[in-house]
Image (tube, rainbow, N blue to C red; front, side, top):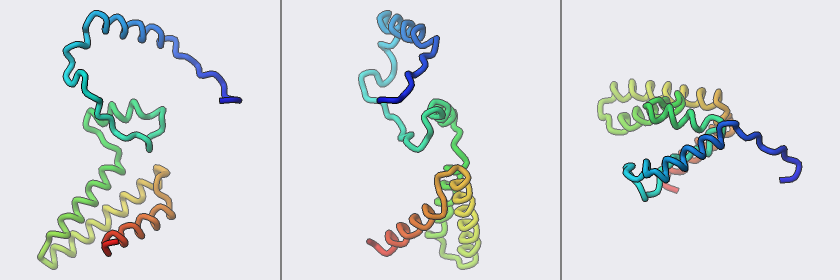
Amino acid sequence: MPGMLPRRVDPFFHLVERRIAEAESAGAFDRLPGRGRPLDLPDLSGVPAELRASYILLQTAGFVPPELEARKEWLRLEDLLALCRDTHEAAALRRQAQRARLRYRLLMEQRGGGGASWAEYHERILQRLERGG
């Protein structure tokens, strides 16, 4: 693209590429599980490019971002609430779900992925889905 500066090449780039080529020609990758099948890569379009490698590393180790954990908790509580038949227990679950949803929204706003307009849009989508279209 015109006007862009050339990308700085990491000094180890060529060394790493050469080592990978040597290992490949020596057959080091021939018996890897999943060989010949496409990779199942997560959608990282919402993660900044410079953070993607660390994100995958943490995710593989079992760590998830706090906003994702909060969303999972909120949805878990909503599922429990949908199945609950006891009115007192349902009221307690509703309060917990509201707190979990608020925590999720606050974390999303701090992250920069969920401002007030996003929350309003999200609400309208949920209402439309609940009405069935």
